[in-house]
Each structure stands twice: as C-alpha cells, then as structure tokens.
Length: 141
Image (cartoon, rainbow, N blue to C red; front, top):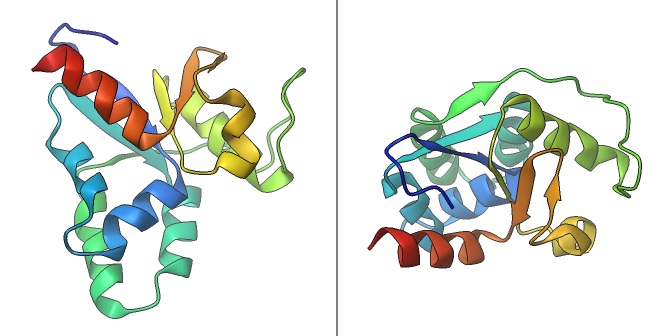
C-alpha cells in the first residue's frame, strides 16, 4: 500500500456500497474516514446498490455516502480479459476499476471475485474490504 500523501484510489463494488449504507453503524463506513484515500465507484455499481436497499433511510444513507465518492463512466459491456473468469454482470465492475486507475477494487463478492482476492488484474488489486482496512490501518497508524 502507498504511504505517501498521494491519495490511494479505491474502487467500491456495489456490495460494499450496499453494506456501508445498510446499517447506520456499519463498520464499512470507516472507509470514508481513511486519509489519504480517494473512494471511487461507477454509476452501474451505485445503481445496483440503490436497487437492492429496501428502505428509504438506507437509500438516503447511500446517497449521503456517495456525495464524497468519485464516479467514473465506463462501458457496461466491456470485453472480457484473457485469463479472468467472471460472470457478465461483474465485468463492468472490474472494467470501471481499471478505467478509474484504482489501486484497489474492494468487493465482498467471494463467489465471483474470490479467486482473485490478493491478486492484481490490470493494475488493480482485488481485496475484501476487511483485508484492505487491516492492511491500510497497519501501515498508517
């Protein structure tokens, strides 16, 4: 992980956004307090989170969290990468993280991204949010 003052670009998958907004006291909300970190997502991921949050309070929390998250525009149907096996719905997430020039893609989707946890794909390291937080805090505290 970077230890300089240059912001570390961290792309948030829809399930991370969802989890951060689901409960008022969600532990993942700590991501928004990390410095120097620039949180990034795509409108595709943001919309997937919106679609899955069941109540208005959660939806409002999501919108509040998204205010400080940079959003990138990326193709919704990118070409798959050789050697990477993902369902069609997950390609826009990986592609957007690459387009965003993120150093990290945080996802809780172990079913689809699990084989890539701890690996770097086109310059983006795929990590579980908890592992990213553990590593980041160990280096910055």
